[in-house]
Length: 119
Image 1 (cartoon, rainbow, N blue to C red):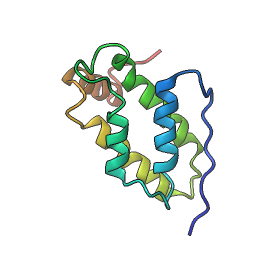
Image 2 (tube, rainbow, N blue to C red):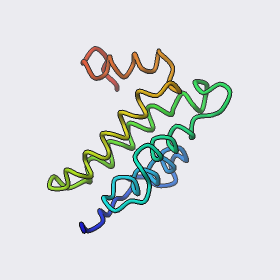
Image 3 (cartoon, rainbow, N blue to C red):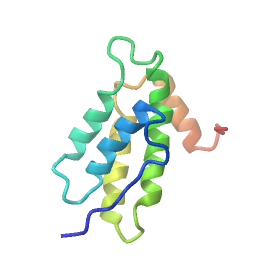
Image 4 (cartoon, one colour):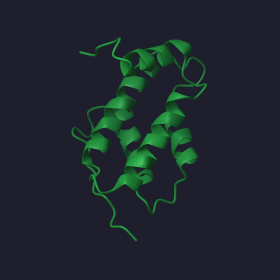
């Protein structure tokens, strides 16, 4: 069994949404996690507000989620490709979900293809 990866959020308490995302991801990327990848993705999607999931604070979900994923990814050691793969699967599951609006999916596509610069 692999040793658990110690992960830290850069600014805990700064954003409740990022804190919640981080708590889920921190456990889900561990190779001995009791949380399935599908369950982790569902827990993350459950953070979106009900009813109007694309309004504030839901509008910040995608940005907060991706920034948190980046923080987690940076801390996973290169030799832990199993944990890296778990993170990628969770990210893909969330981004492909029907809970994200078509405009949010377009933003993700534009970012991935270099058509949109964040900053």
